[in-house]
Image (spheres, rainbow, N blue to C red):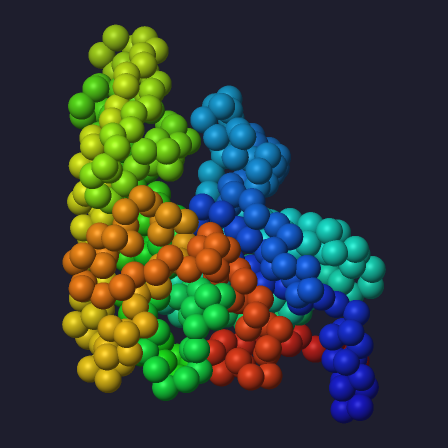
Length: 359
């Protein structure tokens, strides 16, 4: 028993801890005392002839829509859950090893870190196990799982362990997580598979329907970021939209306005608002009283959609605040939970450490 205890202390000293926000669109890695050291797209490029992984992250995203037929650049996660286990495992291994390199911890047991991973609220036990197994096979020694809205609340420095209602809406790439948090746990939640990717798809469908123009996902995302909004803008904006005309097959450029994009996004934004309202209806009155005072907190890249916080305030009659640096809130919160593991252990699900035979 003494040898086992000694081994655990040794691995804890030599290895490194890290928090991973394994997102549908982007993955972030947080290392204590260093902050967020990796922020790359959750994209993997694969040679289908050999099965070889050619690129991961930023390099793979550059290939999206630009590869020959035998190379595909895809996301191994769909709506926040693993769709390709082996590719996700390789992507996690890449992030863990890159984090070790950037932290100058490539010696000894630096490949056996303690890892905390953010997951959506609505995942099944099978999907949770897939995340654990992928992390373990990628080299993690101990795996903790934390719900993304809870991590976002910790990242926003909300008093999650107090007996008070904290209302968090985390709009990521694949899912929108709406949750009410109190005493370190989630009281009620909604997990909606309408988020940033769906908004991009809405713009793609709008271009096809209105202009018979076929555009790519990157073009749609750029339009969303540049002129997309949840409410009509006071000052109308415009942008050139380039793609291929479906009828003629020739390249074409059309100018679209912010009002057109706002109408294209209206249905999906409405679904997010409905999900927030439903969660409010299910919130206990005492906690709802706290939310009315403190407001609704928005996190995730989708929260940056122009006018969304104003629309939520208008629809719910409650203040709506975008948290500081919403894109990194989940990763920062997961990292803070790992740094304060003694006091926040109750908010995380833990996978036991692997013992080395003979110890």
